[in-house]
Length: 116
Image (cartoon, rainbow, N blue to C red; front, side):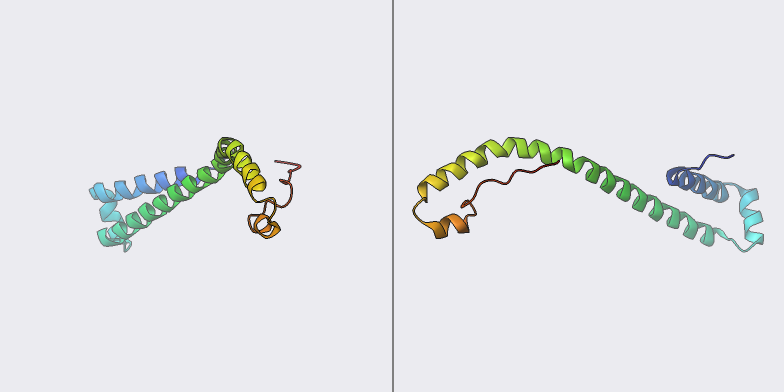
């Protein structure tokens, strides 16, 4: 049973095939007989390049999404102590004015999360 090839491997294969078609006189002549002239091969090459660029962009976005929780947790740990300190100061400063506490959303305790 043949193993599945990745999209990246298939795109490299297509790119190589099109390069060979453009650079080999014999292959180019055989393809021209079937209606695939150099213009049509160039169109195919451009299509593969665009697909490859979209694939790399998708892969980068996927990596960014995979790393987002790690980045968030790191930033949260850096900001949390300062936030708590400033929140406490604001509660003390505005403890007489219930409207300001509600507007700043510090009129209740900080919610605790149960899971990550």
